[in-house]
Image 1: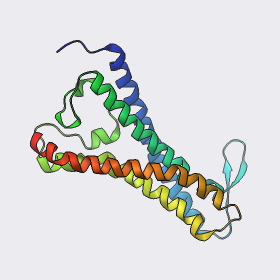
Image 2: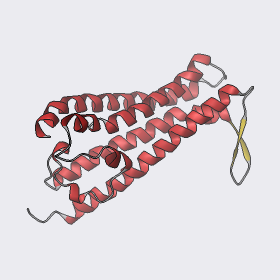
Image 3: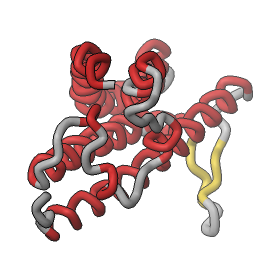
Length: 197
């Protein structure tokens, strides 16, 4: 095997680290918005949140309204990092996802990579289910973002409800489409994965 291009190798490592950070940020943001939503739904009125250090009160409804754009943007960043990783793998001459070639270059695997780690000796059913790890996680992010978008739209609880609805739709629609195409791609890969495992 020829010596890999050091610039593309560095690019592969940098994008892998960035992807790991974005996945953790999405996890924390999803838990934060879910907790905030359950807290706001159970208390009367619009509870104020306080920004740490400066103790600035912020409306919980305003923070919730930012949920759709924030979650959608993070999911888009993760999807973009996936494309950048594929581009680096192609530039390094590594083959597709299902053949484990180039695993030695992934020096910063993320939580999904490790939670759904498979080898060529893994059972075909386990490898096939693991192939959908990213797709399931990103779908959860898109579903929560959609729920956060629908809540103020359905309630029209504030005079400004249409502002976050417009911003959220602009980011959520392309994100939902990209996650849908990821699912289609993963489903199409199943026969190939099944033959190579």
